[in-house]
Amino acid sequence: MADSGNGEDTRVRLLHAAGDIFSRKGYQGATIRDICRKAKANVAAVHYHFGNKERLYEAVLRHAHEDALSRFPVDMGLSGASTPRERLSAYVRALLLRMLSKGENAWHGALMARELAEPTPMLGRFVDRSILPRMEKLREIVSDILGPGADAALVGLCVQSIVGQCRNYAVARPILVRLFPDLTYDDSGITRLAEHIVRFSVAAMAHYHDRQDEGLGAETAHAIPSRPDSHVRQ
Image (cartoon, rainbow, N blue to C red; front, side, top):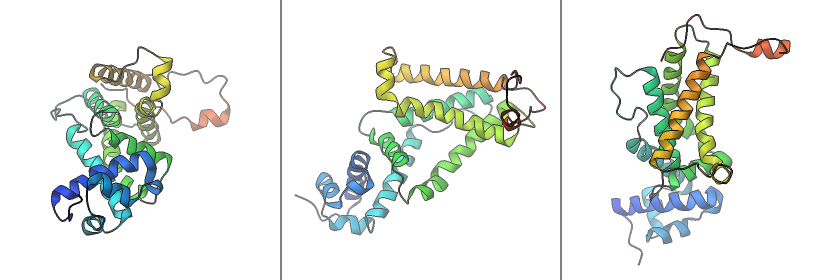
């Protein structure tokens, strides 16, 4: 029997039920009635705790983000004296764990994947409040690795490449496990992926300008950010 829905326990059940249903059906396909049935709560509880479906969805996005960050923070508990490479390793491992973790919170990654595939009007606010601060952390790490004088455009491209590698293992997972049977997504597998992404990315940044310009069109060569005045630091 559904309860009256005024307690914090009901609010938490609604968040988890809504997260699971939104991640599977999308914002448009999910209904308040389905969410309340799964949460064993009265339909009026959604209005009491969140106001409407849109605000419930925003709350679910925020809850998933904050819960994932509390379990897998961007620095993974590193000290302030850590090297840029150690900070990048922690950041990448935490990001992969947030994307690929299983269990009762597996809907977190699935919800974000669906939001990226089917953007809602709430995405912009979520990016500004939640994703942008984390991205700035990665920008700082990449800037420290590239060293003083690193071109801002190059920093942005490297940040996108690092995140893109991580996202590939989440979004393309059903394909990758068939193409590469030895690929695993348990703790040791995620650690291996994180180390590969870090080694690959640090090496790429170290040798970014070790290129042959011959054969590049003028337009392509001009688009490549100029060489910074310092070497890559690890």
